Image (tube, rainbow, N blue to C red; front, side, top):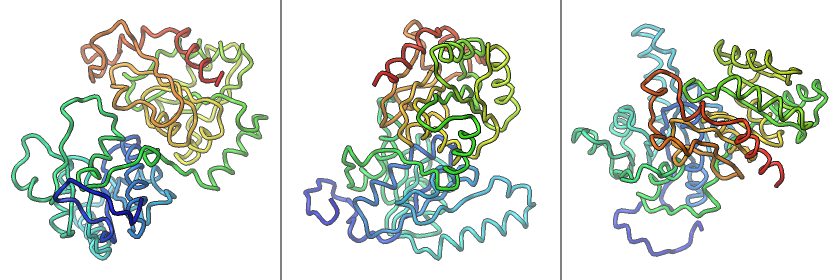
Length: 368
């Protein structure tokens, strides 16, 4: 597509052949950053001469490092606040100087974070894209050369919503360019291979289940998840459980293990994000809730069963892989976006899902 002369009805389209350096800003959580990965791939496909950098929070950087379309991943460490006023100012100045030296001619800001507007004013790129945000002042709007409009229909997938920033400047993504991508890397692959060897597994011969989310109102009850694991084991499937290093998530895995006739293999709290991706890539099937590991599964191409409750599967469901979403059809109030019914941290639309429903979805994907 690069170099092809095509008719573009957008009068203020950016001439892609003149783009040299780009900064894409995504200051959100892990899953949010990962679903922005197609932006880099599409931009590189249409402007292959461009060097494309990312700016993300430090703890989310592994979602994008090793991405073949990204030249540099710049980071903001939330821990800078602990350095005191002088320490934080020094870190911020060093980041600004690094970004300024890159000489960006295009900045793409994918969230409503004010830092994106400030950086556009300070870095003075030739072109800049930011989202329309209701109630924002003229200062916000005039910080960008192009404002990306949000759809009035809230059911647009976040991958497409991110790509809308490129559409706003005249770049139309082809269907085969929109895939999410996460590259685990050789070190992560080797580490996971060693873990699997210790379990007597080779890869492609197990199901990976990540039962938790950082938001527990998105989680299926422990008893149901244990019932699912037990049923899969009874069918002869090896199951590997994972969890983040947090005490709550590891406690959930321990509670599941205690309810099983025989413990599943577990790497709970033992893996980096890259290693988690390598494990998922080596699995036959991923099962989990609406969480970053679910998006990781899609990004490494693993068929995915995703359980959804109060969050929206149309916006946040698995992208670009064979998948099944298991969600309640008996609760017309979902997706409500509330942290449990009435804010009580327990979501009826999730607790009503049965083991049979989830197992049936898994069987459909395993049969492919």
